[in-house]
Length: 457
Image 1 (spheres, rainbow, N blue to C red):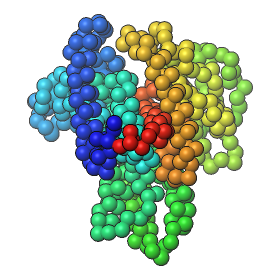
Image 2: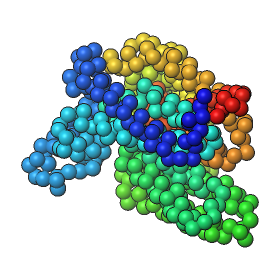
Image 3: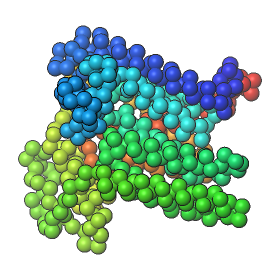
Image 4: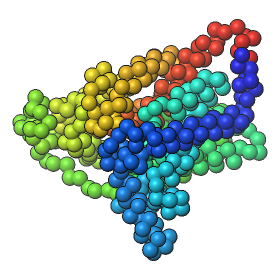
């Protein structure tokens, strides 16, 4: 029944077909949304041009202003990040070449989304046969929520692709050594080019996240040392040397980006340890400013990171919104933040909760989106149950724990920082949907094993 797919195993042909399919799907569906669905159903500002996301409308305005500047001064006026907004800079490039319309961005968005689907399949192929990996990649790509950036102008698509390439690269460090003349070329591509490209794309989209990636990379050093020590070093000296060289290059590149190319505003941790004015029962509007309680034994460089998350969380809460959760929680110390981690994981993995499966959202488009959230979320719950099955079956596979670790770090960071579920769903997409795709692939693999051998091809 599926033998024709089996023949493609180990060949790049299926990956190319997946990319072409996702590209065509994303481009055509986005054209339909921008040219007909949005202008017909909505009347808010920007809807006439197919834009309903507020950020996208702002990026469109900046991009059109930059197009006028380029027409007057030439290409020397082009910037990657006009007004510190990379989506506007990228849009201005396509606006200048193809015309100042949001539809000019759609082929680029579709390419990025297709590459993300291919990267997701490459990751899943480390654990599953070709059919389950393909299905897992498709659920990653076909989630309707992705149209918030695929059919609009946003930074999420590039951010997602960058993180997936980074995961591919980090997982390469834990694979067994490859013998043969192409060994060093594989090191260069898998452990060098792929993670560096992913880090660069993330820097373009959200520069601050490179700091999280740097911490993640350094955390991976601990299991990497144990993996290296467990192998026969006498037969793997070249492999160990390649690992070390590639790892140092990736870390050095991240440090260089963080040190010299990432905006950084120093934040002084307040000396006050009083929390008397912090009342967790007060509403968001009437709650007092955050009073941080210092942890005496914790180094300031570490506590400063927790304090930044707390400040960012307070800023996100102050913006309000119809999808705020735990708005009355006061994460006013490192201990309070660590104590909130289980709840943050619950929110990051299982939101949106039933109370957000209907009702009125911030815009008419988001209100319509809520109508499909219930069924999609229930389906994802089933997939996440499959994630548990896969974790148990592949529990001795180090690559699996690397992937899970990077995804959970991403989900947890954003769940701690953004109590607005609408925002969290966008930010977590690459990490969350990779876990969902893994869970669905686990179910498919389990089903295929129960089929008669002749039906599995």
